[in-house]
Structures are given as C-alpha cells and as structure tokens.
Image (cartoon, rainbow, N blue to C red):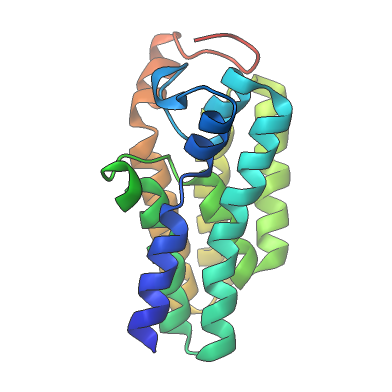
Length: 194
C-alpha cells in the first residue's frame, strides 16, 4: 500500500492541468509566454479565470496525496513521500515527457495537507510580496524559503521539516532563470506580457 500511495501521488502530481485547460481553449501554453504549464503562465496567456482554475487544481493535486496517505497510513514518512511525489510529478510529469511546472501551487497544497496554518501564512506572504513587487517569482521564492525557516525555528516534526525544505529547494532551483532575470532587471512584472 505505501508504494501504491506514493505512485498515486506522483501520477496525481503529473496531471498537467495548465496544459489541459490551455488545450481546451485552443492554446498550447508550452508555446506561449514563458512556456511553463503553471498557473502564472496560464494567467498571462489565458486570463485570470483560467489562471485561478489551474492554481486551485494544482493546489488540490498536492493536498490530495497527503490526505490519502494520512487516511490510509498516518505514518509521517509515508505522508512526506506522497507529498514529495506529487511535487516531483508536477515538476517532471510523465504525461509531458517530464517537462512540467515550477511546483509552487502543488507545494502549497502539500503544505496545506500537513500544516494548514503555515500554508495560509505562506499564501498570504506570497500575495503580499507579489502585490508589492509585482514579481510572482519573488513572491514564490521568498514565501517558500520563509516557510522553511519558520519550520526550523518552531521545531516542527523532522519529516515535515525535511519535506518543506526539499519543496523550497525545488522551487528555488526551478526559479533560477527568474532569479537571474530579477538580478539583471529583465524579469517581467505581473500584468506584463513576456
């Protein structure tokens, strides 16, 4: 059962909702804007309704594997592996030749599954940073790293702290091109076309 749960987490994470919704609207988001299948590029390409829908679905595909693992096992290690599998599935989906998104919404969903209050804090922090700077990438990276630091400071359970740390690391790595553009002053702000 643990292996089935982990595999299910990966497969759920691999569902490319951004790509699917784009196709429904006649657009391949991989060939529009940044080429990313995540909510931000869908927002820029197809508008707020499509972008919001993708965010919610990507969020749920992170939370659902965690809830399933908690319901069937309760073992924190299995919960962590299922959550991590969902994030990896989003970033490297088997359905799109392992070329996926940056994992922000799915990581937020996983976080909501293990620590709802921290997920709410992270989303609010992301929203504030993004609103003040209009850089989605800055909001994503800073929120992820801050939540991990808080987990360390508060002494949260080790398996969950490791999971949040790995999620934050993946988000930072996937945003390296964005970070380089932020430093160079060429990163597009929210509302600007790429």
